[in-house]
Amino acid sequence: MQIYLLFKSGFISIVGCPNAGKSTLLNLLIGNKLSIISPKVQTTRHRIMGIYNVPEAQLIFLDTPGIIKPKYKLQEHMMQAVDEAIADADVIVLVTGAQAELIPDTDFLNRLNALQTPLIVVFNKIDMLTETVLAEYILQWKNRMPNALCVPVSALHRFNHPMLIKAIVAKLPEHPPYYDADMLTDRTERFIASEYIREEVYSMFHQEVPYSCDIQITAFKTDLKGIHIQGLIIVERESQKGILIGQGGKALKQLGIRARKKLEPFFEKPIHLMLRVKVESDWRNQNQKLKQFGY
Image (cartoon, rainbow, N blue to C red; front, top):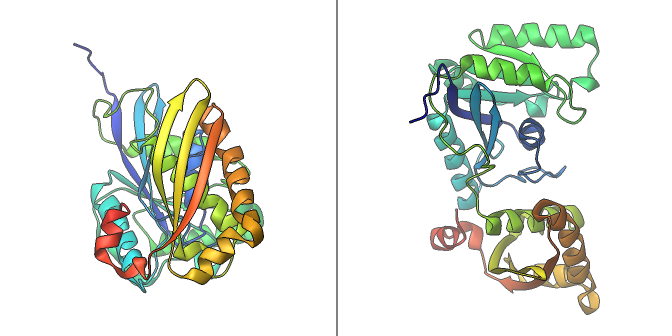
């Protein structure tokens, strides 16, 4: 029987507004691209677990959707994922920035202040601030969140994240590791493939198309030639289907090429990808469809 002397392990929920840099921070902290990234808001739809091990601790990060006021049932499910992550957390990391749109509303901040869970406020994108402005900003947040530890970082430029890791470990409870040391996430390969494809949809298409689509992996098979993936892109309207397919199927073909180039480095195998598009009217507002699609 293995004994873990003073070993720490726990769940760290990463929360904040859309585009605060939560997913970029998660990928930096675990040293692998697990959460997809896009300049568009609401890219993250699910709670994404990423596991990082240091000699004295296991850190289990939970990336979450950005805090918003839900407008349809999909967004309600997204905010439920945030609530569950906060409830499960041993440490909460609130990611924010100097821009007003990256600061959660007062109700959410008051909710965090009322919790007994250790809280760390991470100031991301500090490369955009002068030292004087950053110092003033930290002081404002210390007044706003008096029980929180404030840590400045730049996830994009890989600045100061070792200090953040140390700060998190200091607040974790003593506990044996929850997962094996070689485990990166609890998400399946099918899920990761669907997210990488959806990331390329967000990159290539605009307006309502990315927000109206979902990716379902209908086949995932590995053989000596690599990984064979069949993906179904769900949209809400025929017009969106036409945009995704493009003239003569060119847009869909380009989407497949770009997604494959992203998938191959992650899986470290050749990827054979086939994509189709299907219309499911108003799926974002149907609980049955949302459950079917994994929300």
